[in-house]
Length: 280
Ligand SMILES: C[S@@+](CC[C@H](N)C(=O)[O-])C[C@H]1O[C@@H](n2cnc3c(N)ncnc32)[C@H](O)[C@@H]1O
Ligand SMILES: [Zn+2]
Image 1: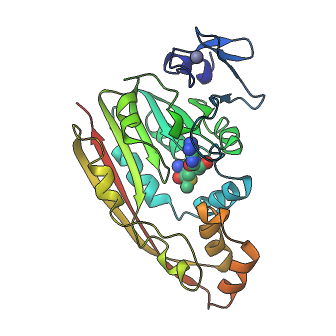
Image 2: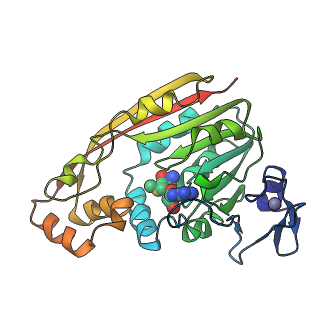
């Protein structure tokens, strides 16, 4: 049985909330909603779009490549170590990585926590295509976490959200009794220096306190700040800008022209807090 087959034990229909069962070419529920399994090994659990605005499409391949280079250069290693430390050493069962991208964090956790399986959910088809190959104990699903997480109530031991959006009530809903929520959120000064002379999106202040209080009945297990200054080349600084939502509003050539005017190396602050909460 593949990990995606095993994941049916925790998946639910994004349209009606009924349990999903395996079908020849994908998944189906008792109400006969049908979802396709992509050739690349992930399941597409996108419900018909209801809310306002365009449906979430997630990160583009160019953003994923920029993030991959930045992560491969080691700049997120301390964040990954803090995220791993927040996952209980004896964790077993399922971890759901919400907005989990290419599975970079989930795969490292699986290496260190042999009793865990992971489900990566992300709106970006390009990301889940990569995540589907990231680890043998990892299943990948394309889903919009804002329109309800297609995971059954009280079914996962660990819910992870690293630099990604989503509702705390949904995190609470999917966590099993005694389960752990792990959030990694940037501080207002994260990558702040790159904003000088560029109209980049600002990180709002107070996100760490906000997530620490986001599940009222949970206990705060740990809150660890990872803060460090790094020296970046112009290319690395460009990746830092274009791996995130600024990519939707900025032109790489224009930002490159500004950054080339600065004297490299470009010294930048990384400031992230990793919060772990345990639900009763
Ligand atoms: C900044 S990236 C972080 C990815 C990953 N957690 C990491 O740190 O490597 C944010 C991720 O959230 C995803 N995303 C954005 N909106 C989403 C939504 N409504 N539903 C699911 N995923 C979403 C994006 O596609 C992207 O992969
Ligand atoms: Zn259904």
